[in-house]
Length: 227
Image: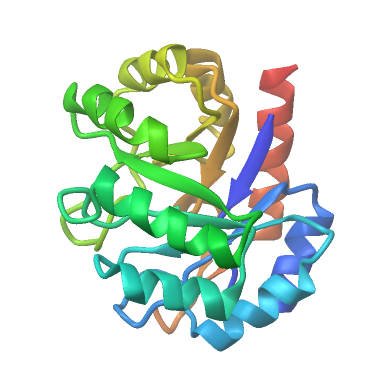
């Protein structure tokens, strides 16, 4: 069972979590007011620090393929996490973007977010499967741009159906924390699980840092459930 944790804001924080056994660490290079967003420069510093220690994932909610490509060129992650509006970043757009990026970054993987808003998620997954390497099934909140960071769960029976149908590895996300990740794994049987909101420690300023104790508990609970 792989574990992915969002969102790293410093290299030191990322290295601490990698040492706890986290497999994939995500950064949010953006200037849109997203939770835990950082500059491309800081994201690149984190990615460089994690070389050989964890899979480096960079998220984009952008609809402009040129903006997405520019972020990848600047940050150089192992995985590009696309979680923007799928009505704009369609499978055709992802196909073209993927082709352009692989010419420069031949080992880059595409992690496509599927908004788990209802049964239509099954159709979305089928449409994106030919142009993606990995799926992440995530919840959606009106107050957050893009897919994810909602902090709430969704219908796990739909997630289980996508896992059963898809040929791709599937990451389950959306409202997962140490207290419910085991139940989620038993219900969905994903390839990996992801956490953002419920492994945070809020700051007085309104932001957050990752809580190493919560992350360690999340990793332990996930691995125990998988075993």
